[in-house]
Length: 162
Figure 1 (cartoon, one colour):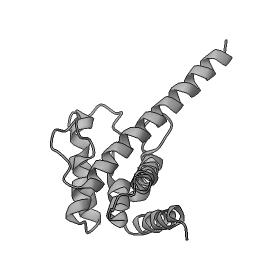
Figure 2 (figure 1 turned 180 degrees about the vertical axis):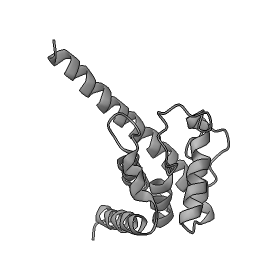
Figure 3 (figure 1 turned 60 degrees about the horizontal axis):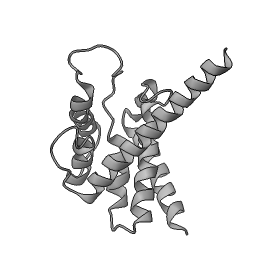
Figure 4 (figure 1 turned 135 degrees about the horizontal axis):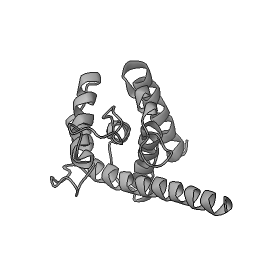
């Protein structure tokens, strides 16, 4: 079986597990970047993380990489709403995500670090594992692509409306 197929199956298995045993499906209720939900974003980050590890032949713990990626934005609120408890979201949401994940899952130290450190360098503490670095990078790649896609859709929609 091809490596990409292996991690695709691991991702699908972990999504199913999280959907059945946690509040992961609630992430479908919150928009992340543009028209992308937090649910879709986290899945994108899991796939991108695996692609990065595979492309560079990195020896990683794929299960922890995937679980950390899927739970990295498990903050379970609408960050677009003005709420001083969540502000500034970019700095605070990793802690909310980790607290929620701890309530719903048994996490390894690596998975906790992935969730808590994925906003590096915005949050200044260094990731402790290569898996944490990978998810941090994958998150930025996916967020940029999602925001660009939203920008492009809005640009073409406004141009065609003229």
